[in-house]
Length: 290
Length: 277
Image (cartoon, rainbow over all chains, first blue to last red; front, side, top):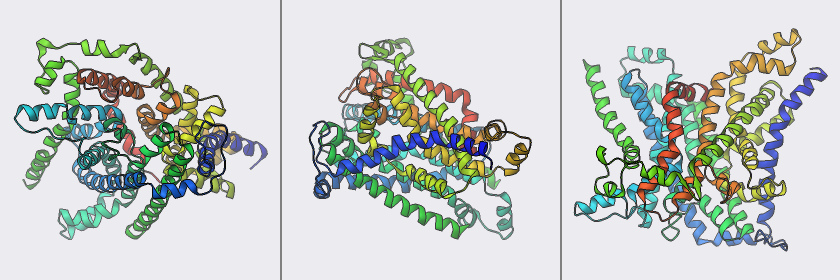
């Protein structure tokens, strides 16, 4: 490599890493620094507070509940969406006019913003919404989809599933198309039925797509924010607050910058540990299966 | 025979399900053209003789919200962010794919760990950084942040793809005396089209639909994107569903039209470039 090559590579590399450092790494270092202060975000005076914020956050009932809500949404959505994703990808992995129509329909929810889709669902499901008006006109009782704490969490989970499945189908479809047809020929000769073909070839061969989809759903659901902001504002009485929602709410509305920084660090650590563990486990699984 | 029966069952399952999936969109579209009384009386019907554009006229431009301004801001932010991301990260990924040393390995690890970072976590310190640079409440600030945040994803797509391209391509061009810039832009980049297509589709959707970052970085006054604009226009307690439906339809129309025209490319682009390496 001569001098001009080295210069070329350096200038190709520099802008990207510079922006990444300024707008992602520096904020994370600052976040950690803030979390050890007692700063409200505006006051010129603040001092070192040690682990005080972390201790307070550890005892914070609201944060614990938000963590529970987030984990519930994440686990249920990840499991259900991956199950549905594989099922529909297999059903849609054919040629034909109708299949194209189905694909377009299933992909559609992933095009629109969570905010737009959230407003559509809000107008249908809220207490004064279209569905409840219909129920009442039929002589039935209105259902508190967003007013009842438990039901509200379930509704948000359902809507997360409804909106993410299309994207996961895309990942599995791509995976299915990379499985060589010759593998199926071989077991068909041995007389394997459809279910056996799926169990012994399709599902193991989908391992890389499985890894990608699970990680994508996991990291996506752990940062659930938009739906909560549009549908419930965290209510009723904080029942649908996720950890991402709390980090933003405490940081920007309650003017407790250092405390929210410690919540954010907790969130970052929890998400990272779980994501790395999941990734390592799923990669090993791939090696075992392929 | 057996196959026809099986295919019949498949349609019996998929057709009702697709229709169910479309119901919310149907409701939004149809009711955007109806009066409030008609919406409440019969949410599914479309009374052609009483169809109205009033909802759109009333909600598209108000003293605090202008959908055309929102389109402009969203197009600017999405267009510039995605163009710069492709320009910067494709070259960066070329370096990652072709050179190997400890510094680059550390950088690569740092970048990949960025994939896990929830955006809400860095918002507060990011606001301080942008304020220090004088970029708070500006589209430039949001664009720079978008680039930083999506570099890991884009690098991830490109590096996997570039590694599948033979080094002999670079080397023969090198012998002909081409510079690294020339090798990359005139030989490799055109071959990266499937990866570029996937990256562009995903980045456009994510940045166009992004909510919390523009809310915070652009602030509540002055600048708004389509997504943050309709959020503020609807507000927390509104039950004026006629306005809500009109706003949702206006916000979704550009993406919907683009999808109609590019459907085939869209689905191919999503599936081809995204999982490789």
